[in-house]
Length: 243
Ligand code: C5P
Image 1 (cartoon, rainbow, N blue to C red):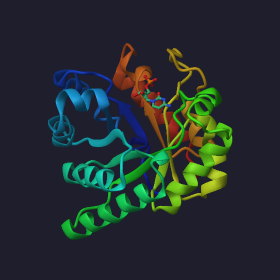
Image 2: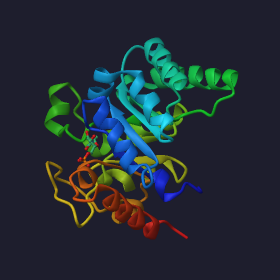
Image 3: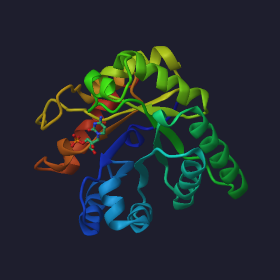
């Protein structure tokens, strides 16, 4: 894969104001290839915030974690394609039919419109879920079994990869092979505070373990020089890439 280090650094736009989102894109764009827009910012600002990032030359990871009946998720995914996002995600717990139908409709739409298919990712088990959480909803399997199982379902449905904790990367690599993308949050460079993240790895460790791209928020946003912090993370990514 020839993805540049800049395309592997995803900044989490964890703000709720359009103007703040715009200021971050303007400030970080030189070192950051993708900007993650999640439920809070999207619910507040809507598709215009996606357009703003793209107009400023950035790419968007639309982190809305779709989970619904197959037809509804497939239609929402096609709308995400129309917005021109580079990457979006669904919950693998929505099941194989939901994921297959989404791949089918996205592929059909992209072929018809002559656009590149966005990178389609699945969330396996949220890292906020413990074995206790799973038992409460009737899943008796350990997280270490559920994560590769759901990752394989996503791969078999035609998804490009998963969002996962850096600690799960090797498990997923072993189950899904080398071409599967693994996007990891919970990354902390040596210079940053842990914040509320508990199980973290450095950017270099995550890339060396096989992560494809990293989602980073506060280590950049809370730094005294955010652009320089992003630059340091890029250098770490670059140094850890094979070859
Ligand atoms: O500030 P920080 O680098 O911790 O931000 C990480 C981003 O990744 C946030 O948007 C957070 O919601 C998201 N995320 C995470 N852990 C997960 C899934 C998503 O930190 N397991």
